[in-house]
Image (cartoon, rainbow, N blue to C red; front, top):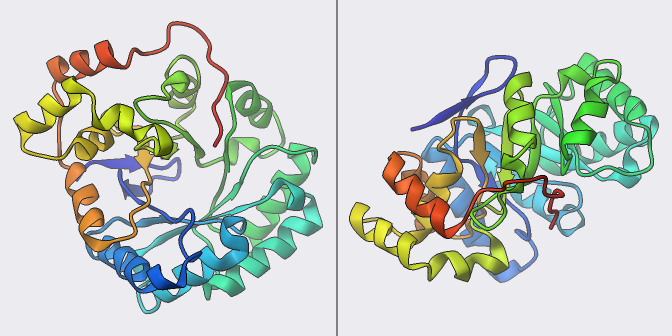
Length: 280
């Protein structure tokens, strides 16, 4: 299985599990928990959630899914920018820990930029690290200029990851953000790697469908495998059912060659100039 290495040397499977909208529908709860557990069994260590997701419902569902399996999970949660002040970050982290039923997070992210100065949020993250409540911290939805600003804040170079939108229909970060982060050794965590509402554009693309036929895999597996080809991206697709998780895990072993990638580029061209960061 392809892996990605964090700045501290931690090696992770290049595919993890997202939980956006999980826990919102009680009728799907059992399947969603089983899906997350299946992913853990398949060594997809990263489980990503956030205090915003269902106002904590996602975190509570994850708590149940990881019960007795915590050591096998790299647990990620995110703090809202409205809670990004020093004291509010500390309090928000405690609430997330309680909902998740754990005494530490492996990775704690600022969900997106708000009005609180980055230096204040970073200071809170470093305090949480010192207390052992988080092992590392990062950001989400930061464009290149945001990352450059963060890099120049005291302790800003301790940022472990940046979680952003990335898929075949949203390639803008390839122009400047991915190169900048590669230079600094900070991986990308890709949310919505199968493009959400735009997914049909991928699913019905003739070239991608032909590649799926060639490799005897699904179109989704081609699209997901594409996101992790660089070795610098961890993709976190959401899968609410175990069979879908198994399909995602198998995509981590799929290697696309230069000819395959050229065909994909023709259908979904890479950026040739700066594209503002897309956020969903």
